[in-house]
Image 1 (cartoon, rainbow, N blue to C red):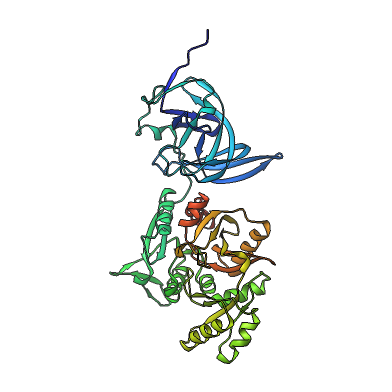
Image 2: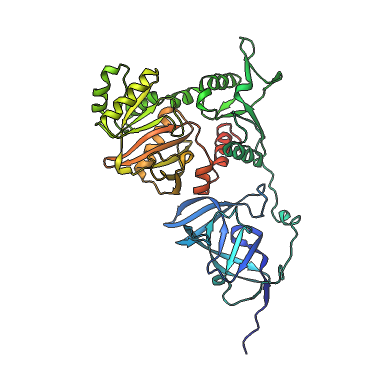
Length: 456
C-alpha cells in the first residue's frame, strides 16, 4: 500500500539551510515545472575548477533592510519563459530544501523577483510526489507572522561607520536619485538630497562653507554624489570643488566631470590613450565644411552638438549636401559641433557598459526604435541584456580610467573594424540598466564610497 502524501497549501514557509535562509515564504505552484529563488548582484566564482555563484537576496518580502549573501554551486544554465512571454537565461543551482519535517535537494533558478509576490516559487519538479497541494489552504505546515519573520535573521553587529552622503543634483524625483537615497539608507547612512542650484559658497582663506537655500550650512559631509544636468555643469563643478575643499570625498570629482561633459576633450583624451573611436572631425570655419565631410568618409554621417545629451543635438545627414546644410546652419548659430562617421553596420544598436571603480559591473544593449538611428532609451529605444567581450570590457574600463571617472556609463558601438567608444557619461542613469540586468547598481555605488572612506 502506497503511503498517503501529506497536504500542503498554496503558500508555505520553508528554509534553505545551505544558503543560510532560515525562513522564506514560497508560492507552491504545481502548474510550474521549475522552482525559482529571488537573487540579485549575481557574480560567477571559480573554485577548484568548478563554477559557483555568489548572490544577494532580500529573504523577507517587502523588506529591503535585511539582506543575505549566499553562495551556491552552478549545475547549469536554463532559458525560462515567463507568463508574459519574456525569456531569460538563468543560473541553476542545487541546494537543500526544508519543508515541514522533510528535507531534500532541489534545483533552483536564480532571478530577480522584486516585482513578484513571493521571494520563492516552488514548482512540481521539486516536489517529487512528496505532497498534495490544496490551493484553498495556506501555511498548513507552519505559519510565521510578517512581524516575526525578520527575527529569523539575526542582525549582525556592523562595524560600518555611519556616513553623511549628499546627492548633488537638480531633480529629487528621478529614479536614479531615489534609488541612491534608498541604497544608502539601507546600509545605515544618513542620506541628503541638495539641489545644486540652491547651493551658494562662502569663499575665504580661513574656512570654506557651502550654504543652502534659507541660510543653512551644509557641513560635515563625508561624501557627495554629483549628478547635475549638463546645463549646470560649470556651476555644479564649482560647488563640487568647494565640497572637496571642505574634505568631502567626491564620487566623480569636478575635474573628471568637466572632462566628460566636453565631448571634444573626451575624444582627444581617449585617442591619446589609444582607445578605438569613430573617425571624428572638428572645425570652425565654414570654408572647411567640404573637407571636414570628406575627412570622416562622407555621408551618411553624424553631426553632434558638443553639449548635447541623451541623444539630443545629434543629427544623421544622409547626403553630403544635407550635411553641408546642417553643419553651416549650426555654425551660423555659433554652435560647436563634431562631425563623425556613421557606423551603418551597427543597425541602430550600441552597448552601455556601467563602470564602477575600474570594473564593469553591468552592461546592456540598446536598440533604436523604428525609423530612429539613436539608441537612447529616452528617445524610445529598447534595452536587453548582453554579454560583452573581454576586449569591450577592457575598452570600457580604459575609457573611464582615462577620464578619471570612478563611475561611468561607457557607450560602445560594434563596427566592422571592431568595437569603438562613442562617448562616456559621467552621470549615467540607473533605471534602464538596473531593470535589464537586475544588478543593484545603486548599492554598488554606495559600496564604492565605503571602500574609499575605509568603512567596513
